[in-house]
Length: 352
Image: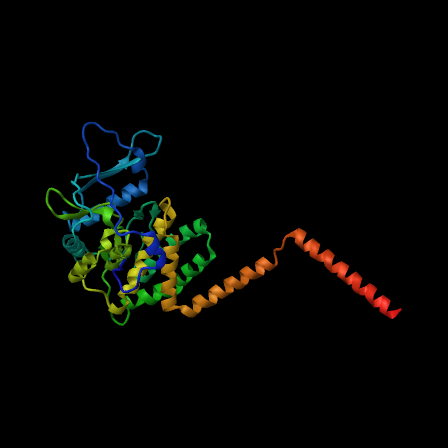
C-alpha cells in the first residue's frame, strides 16, 4: 500500500483500509419514483452547493452540472430543501486520471477570487460540517487554521481523548504555521484558487455522453490549490493511484517550498479524515488521524510533543493515585492504626 507522498501510510491506516474501495453505483431511473426527502434536507447544504456550483460553472461550465435553483418545499413540516441542477449521465467512477487532473488544474489556474483573498461568501458544507471558510483572509494560514480548528472542535467532545487534544493543539499552534506561512513569505505570492472542497472517487465521474471528466457534490471556497489533493492520500480512494497526482503536477507545479509538499499533503488530509471519523458510522479513521497528526508533530515540534505527553502521563498518574476506592482507603487507615498500636505495645513491653 503506497502513499502519493514520501510520508508513508501509518500502520493503523494500512490495517483498516483496503485499496481501493468501491464507489456507490449510480441509480438507474426507470418509470415513476419518489424522492427520499431525507437526502436533501438542510438549508446550508443545498444553498452552499448551489453557490459552489455557480462559482465553478462560471469558470468551467462543462466541469460541473449546471445549477438552476435551490429552495424550500412548500409544506411546513418537515422543513425540507432542494437543489436543482442539469442532469449528467454518470459513467465510470472515478474519472480517468489525465482528464480529471487536467480539468481540475484548469479550474485552479483560471479561477479568480473576487476579493483577491482566501475564503468564500457563504459557509459551504462538507457532508454535515458547515465549513468555517465564510470569511475573506489575506493569509491562507489564517483561513486554513480557522477551518481545521473548527473541525477539530467538533471532534473533541465526540472522541473525548486527551492525547488527541494534545496533537490537535500542537498541529494548530506549531505545524500549520510552519507549513503554511512559508507559502506567502520571502516575497512569495500564493494564488487563491477555487477548490472543489471534497474531491474523492464518488464525487468525480466520466460523462457517458461527452466522454469528459466532471465533478459534483462540491463544497467550494478559494484556497490553496493543493488542498484538493489532500483527500487523494487515503488508500480507500482510487484517487490514491499515483497516476492522478502525477497528472495533476504536470498541469499545476508544486508550490514553493517544494520540499514541504509531502507534509502539506498530509496536513490537508486531516479535515477529510476527521470528518470521516465523527460522521461516518463505523469509521475506522480515529487512530489514523491521531497517528497522522503525531507524525507531523514529530517532524516539526518533537520536543513540544514529548513534553506535553509527559505532562499528561504525570497528571494521569497523580489523578489515579489520588482517587482510591473509599473502602480501600478505610481499610488501609485501619491497618495503619493497628500497626501503630502494636508498635506502642512493643515499646511498653521493652520498657518493662
